[in-house]
Image (cartoon, rainbow, N blue to C red; front, top):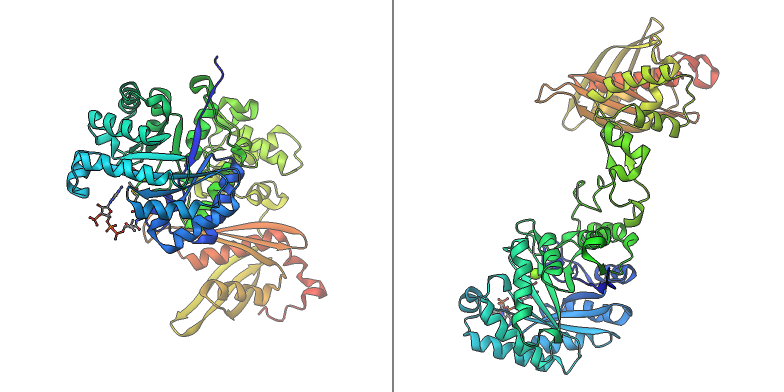
Length: 519
Ligand SMILES: CC(=O)SCCNC(=O)CCNC(=O)[C@H](O)C(C)(C)COP(=O)(O)OP(=O)(O)OC[C@H]1O[C@@H](n2cnc3c(N)ncnc32)[C@H](O)[C@@H]1OP(=O)(O)O
Ligand SMILES: CC(C)C(=O)C(=O)O
Ligand SMILES: [Mg+2]
C-alpha cells in the first residue's frame, strides 16, 4: 500500500451548521465549539460568515485570537465588502483562510444572481484578488456545482486557480448528487481543468437525500478530492451536511479501502457531538451512527452472545475509540441467557446454580414482555428471596379526589399481614397524595428515588404499569404495579416496593412509632 495522502477535514459546524433553522449560536458557544474542534485536530474551522452580522464578525475574531493549531476561515460572497469583513475577522489567526463562493449553475446565475456567466467569472476573480490582500490561503466554491455545466466549471475554476485560489470546493449545495456520478463528476473536472494540480480539491455535500456522507466519500475515493467539508452531527442548512464523525470513522475503519491519512483524535468525537447537541438543543437520534446512544448498544440475545464471546462479531470499531466509555448490552425482551448471566455477574448477585439463573431468566422474560426499561434493580429483584413469597402487604382500594384549585386528596386501604390499614393524606399531585396516604400509616422512612409509568397496552383504556424505586437503610428496590387506573397502579407499585424492603414489618420497632395511623 502507498503512503497515505492526507485528507483535510474542514469543519463547517459554526457556519453551515448555524444555517440549520434553530441552531443559532452566540460568541461564547462558538468559542467552546471551536476549542473542541481544535482539540480534536480538525484542519480547518469555518468559524462563520463575517459579513452576515456584527455578532458573527466578533465571534470569528474571538476564535481567530485563540485557535492556534487549526486554520480559521470565514465565508464571504464574491464581493469586496464581504471579503474585507472576512479578512479583518480572521486577521489574528496564525493560520487563516478566506472562503469565497459564487453560484455557477444556469438556474442560480439567471434566477438568483441575475448575472451572465462572464460576469460571474469576473466577480469570482476579483473576489480572489481582493482576498489575497489578507491571506494566501484562499478557497473558492462553485455553489450548486452539481447542477452546473461542466464546461462552465472548467472555465471558472481555471480562472480561480490562476488568480490564486489554492482550494477548489465542489459543493452539492442541494443534495442532488448520487455517489457514483458525483465521484466521476469530480474526476472529470480534475481531468479537464488544465491547472487542476495547483489546487487541493474539496467536496461539500448536503444531505437532502441522505447521501451526503456517501457522496463525500465517493468524491474522495473516485474523484480524488482531498478535503471534505463536514459538520458535527451533520448539522447544516435544511437536512444538513456530511456528518464529520461518520466520514472520519469511515476513512479510519476502512483504511484498507480509502488509504488516506486522517489525523483526527477520534476519542473527541462523542464529546464534540454532545457539546454541539447541548448548545444547539438538537437532540441526537439514538440510532445515529457513531455518536447515537445506541451506536454501540446490543439488545438482541444472539448479538449479545456474540459480543460477549468476541466483540468484533458485531462491532466494526470500538466504543472507546470514538469517545464512549464502553459498549453496552441492553437487557430487554429480545435478550438471551448469555447477556442475562453476564449482567447478574456484573451486579455481584450471588447465584447458586445454573438452574437458579434459568428460573430467574424465565421471570425476566415475563417482566420484559411488559416493561420497556429493565433496571438493574429489576434484575436484582428477580433474585430476591421474598420474590416468590406471599406478599404480606396487599392493596385493597384507593379513593382519590382532584379538583382544579384544590390540593389532591387520597384515602388508601391495604392489608398488612391480614390486618386492614387505612391511611389518608393530601399531596402536591394525585400521585403524591396517594403515596402520602400510604406513608401516613406505613411510616416506612423509605426515600422515593424513581417513579415511572408505562402503558402496557394501547389506547386510552391502556393498562398502566408503574415502577417505583424506594431506598431504605442502604437498600434499593423496585416495586411494580399494573392497573387501568394509573393511581391504583401507583399505589400497588409503592406497596410492592414496601414489601420488598420489608420495612413495614419492622414498623413495630419504636423508631417507626406506634400504629396510631392504622385503624
Ligand atoms: C449555499 C450557502 O450556504 S451560501 C451561504 C448562505 N448563508 C447565509 O446567507 C447566511 C448569512 N447571510 C446573511 O446574513 C445575509 O443574507 C447577507 C448579510 C449575506 C446579505 O444580506 P442582504 O444584503 O440583505 O441580501 P439578501 O440576503 O436579501 O440577498 C442576497 C444577495 O446576495 C447576492 N449573492 C448571493 N450569493 C452571492 C455571491 N456568492 N456573491 C455575490 N453576491 C451574492 C444575491 O444575488 C442577493 O443580491 P441582491 O440583493 O442584489 O439580489
Ligand atoms: C458556501 C457553499 C460552500 C455552501 O455552503 C454550499 O454550496 O452548500
Ligand atoms: Mg452548504
